[in-house]
Length: 150
Image 1 (cartoon, helix red, strand yellow):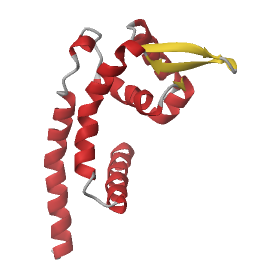
Image 2: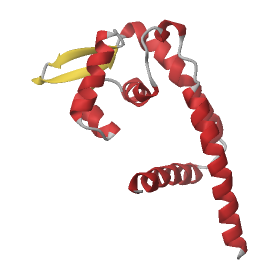
Image 3: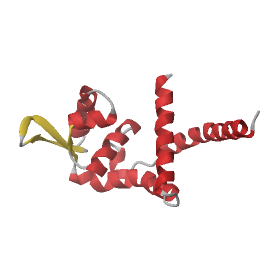
């Protein structure tokens, strides 16, 4: 076995052992007390993260970003709206479209919930050059694609 193959195998081994720890930690991220009674689940994290970082958007925009059907997003938005986590309003430019945003009441708590991961990623990526950061991101996206294709 060549040194390159050995290095690749060691990298794969390290990442295979690391991934369950990362996932476990993400699942154990403490939901802020004011959100605990709302039964928010990890599936809500991506939707809330898009709204937190990118602002209000339509159901179709959320669906495209989450790579799921608009009906799936509509169900999640309906559920989170009933719980008071999200606000929905008609788009003034096109009343057929619904604009979704995080309710003002929960902005801070959701930022706190997601902030732990943001801080950790910033700490991990900050010492890297922009090119190295892109390698990390492309690698994780390629890994996700490889898992999806199986």
